[in-house]
Image 1: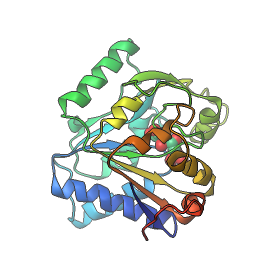
Image 2: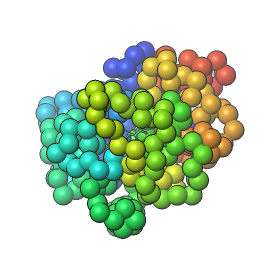
Image 3: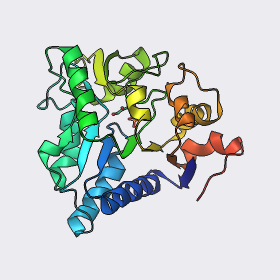
Image 4: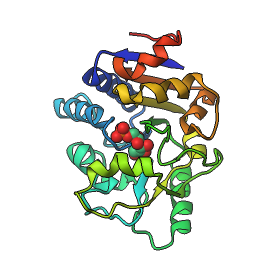
Length: 250
Ligand code: F6R
């Protein structure tokens, strides 16, 4: 595993964007696995800037997102489809038909999970999967305790995840209790994984993820078993990992 430390969120975002853009430049038709949440917003902003300068094109790139709330459609400002449109897709030349996100309004959840697995397979798998980490160790919406061998499935959100994500919903709004998510197995099948972390509130889970035992209680700990993981973080998020003596590049 390679670990890169940046001074702050902006530096971390730039480093993550560098790695994403390198993939797009070296293999324009690559399949990028993308994430939502606070962490990747800065990296997406950087990619948009490079695209606008003419340094980067996504015209052949395919994207598959990790997850989507059940019950929310693309018009809902809290849906992850809406988020991706706002923070990335709407500002670059990626073709809409090349962007894949689970359909939160799918009437038959099992069929939707099967369809999404098939999408990933038909694209030839994921070249680079971008991940954030939840404070409880989740990746995608794979909450602590779920089996490592799952592919796309309907997950029930833990109370801590609902509390953390409530900030994106208007006060008093009924927040979804379930979400479609790629499973750990789908994530682990990506050829490369890029984990981005920022802020002191992630420091402890980052330490446990990469130096603790690999256990379903800490879903992101499975990443220790992936052969090609790059972790980019700001100083605050990597502080506890650094204390363990982990080798960190500047
Ligand atoms: C988002 C996702 C989640 C987030 C995680 C961290 O698509 O799958 O696992 O990556 O909850 O969220 P932030 O970045 O908001 O701290």
